[in-house]
Amino acid sequence: MNDDLIVIDESQTGVMKVVFNRPQSFNPLSRDMLSALQAALNRAATQADCRVVVLASSGKAFSAGHDLAEMRAHPEKDFYRSLFDQCSKLMMSLVNLPQPVIAQVNGIATAAGCQLVSMCDLAVASEQSRFAVSGINFGLFCATPSVGLGRAIPRKKAMEMLLTGDFIDAEEAQRQGLINRCVPASQLDEVVQAWCASILSKPKVAVQMGKQLFYRQLEMGLSAAYQAAGETMACNMMDEAAQEGFSAFLEKRQPKWRTLN
Figure 1: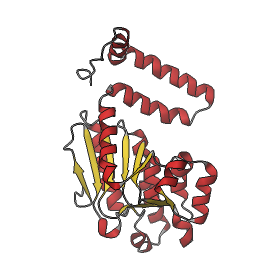
Figure 2: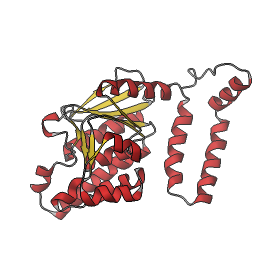
Figure 3: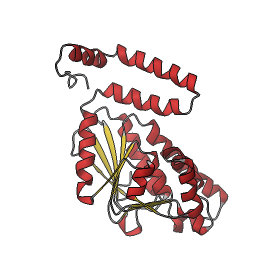
């Protein structure tokens, strides 16, 4: 892992915070940056004591998307195909990761940077943050970012962003569902820490089973989705964490989950 491209902070128990560290170039998702982030996610997936992953950034941008200078320097279809395959694999890793992933956005998130936000499980942004899929302004439809964006916000709003390349502010991003909350920059850490604390207080098995099922059922028909959800709930109910939770509810006491996580 190139620790110069990203900084990993694990000072909060149970949380891996991954900070993009190329502020002078607006944290582009170059091939090296994608590799460094993929390595961090792979590491998180294997760490039993990691319960939440937070993606954040240094500087004035969350991420401006792909490194255009790098792309211009390699005008070969094989290079572009490899780059977009690498990026798509990373985006799928966010979905497949056992832990919830939180995007902490402070600044612009454009093109593949906006895509990254759309693929995280939760997202909070500072009031000055802005979002765009602006490739169309340079003759390139943001095809791969459209996959995440079109699943995160209403279809016509996604097409408006994709066809015009216009920015939306953080308040509009919240209204459309791209992010959960828009807050002053001074409150970003507070919101993320509150989310992390809430997730950490829940049984690990329920969080992981629930995340896996949520994304899987979205790709199914209604009948298959209910079948998969029912099977997941049945398996979840057999776990001792759920049994403890139900016992605590019936006995009017707090569940004792810490020993089970």
